[in-house]
Image (tube, rainbow, N blue to C red; front, side, top):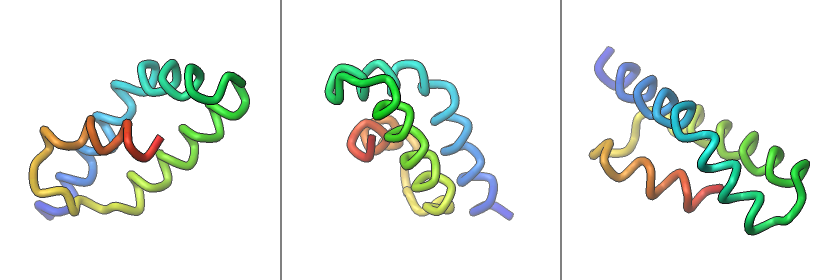
Length: 67
């Protein structure tokens, strides 16, 4: 149950900072569709990650890295 709760917190954090992640991806990729695709792929990685980060404070840095 605890692992599931952490995974939910990671995904919730992803949703909260998604607009910032989109702007970040758009700045790098220069194309709105490519930025949306990058976010979609990142959301799948977060979902499949399933709570394996030990410290939730490292999640934002990890999210920027995977986008």
